[in-house]
Length: 539
Image (cartoon, rainbow, N blue to C red; front, side, top):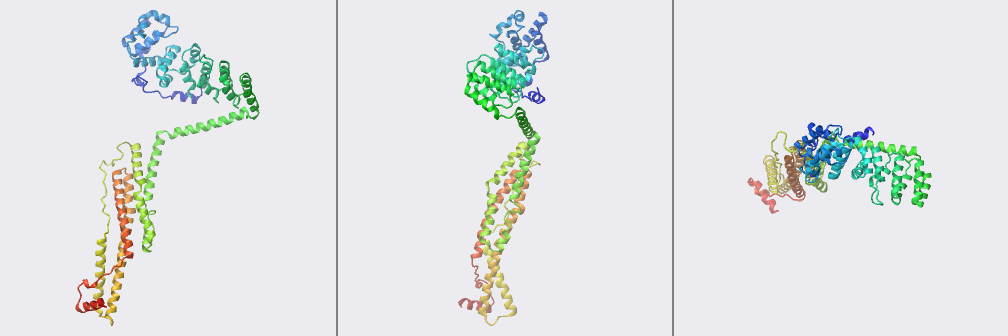
């Protein structure tokens, strides 16, 4: 067996529990006393008193130890006749067992795993274990029985027992290939219902790593026992360039006796097959590539690699989350669009802000981060490192209402008219008072409109800057600190800010189209100014 096969065989996972048996794997081995007692009981060279002493020790211990001793007494073999004389009381134990089903299963594990017992006896125990627990029992037996013991399956199959165990062993890719081929040959020669070819035998005939002569021997055994069912196997062998040419020709001769048409087809195929050396080189390259891929897969499945991938996934999600709301990406031209009063562009900028904070994938990213963090660091990873409760940010960003905007417009208009009155009081009137009042009225309205437009634009700018410089970085920082409660609070605040941005955009649009006219007569004036304003209103 190659080093690779040996390493694989030694690493077969042992089942922790077996069907109908709640005894863990660590307790399915006998202690030193029971192991010595079982070895003495099965040893024909021992005196009767020693063997009887071993039997009594197992009877006193009871349970699995008694089940193992009963198995020795009741199992056919060279030891059988003497044990019938030494322990006649255990012959009836098979009909009235004083141990449970689980204890009997553990007793079989004792037998299969006890060094010093005859190999055939251990193999029979392993076969009984497979019969009781199928694949789980086979995995247990592979861990208990030494590698040398499985070669006896060839004789066991020819004697008519352990056939199912032999099929499992022949299909086991972790078992030594040479031993599998020998067991497969025994299976191919074994009497069974006509026309039945075990799947394990079919796989072994097609195995590219098996010796060409062994594959031919398997196919010939099947052809002798079931000629009609061997056609597929013979064709597969005759068309395989890894098989020696002489063995392929022998296979074609066998096909002549079963299916002459297939035989002619395979004979014509021979000239198109590559040489054995070329086929071996191709197979070796494919095997090396598969081995490298398997090694890479094992490397990817190591705890360190899994943790590294988790860390990379978490960091990638955080980087993407931070990048989407950064000042270098989100509504970067809003300031220019506001200065140019570009309605469509500003609408796109606001829609971009709202699309970011309202996107479902942002919340999904936070949920994904929380799940990945719990996997990476444990169930308590969503708490802050200092153990404090998550804190939700208050929505203390600035807001702007139509009422505030109207009051601001009135204040700016009054300030403009007050400043004009100061100029009149200081420098006096021009020749045409009505024209001067009318000019001031237009200037005041234009000033108020400009201030309102600037106020709404500044409000939009402040909201965008508050989002990209304060709220979004705080959200990402909270996610990096695994404080997902606060992160969701910042996201909720960002969504409220997006609602305010939509409202601010509507106010900005209205400020462009609306005429902010102000009636100066609502203010108090000196008599001469009042009269001029009255005359201007009537005019």
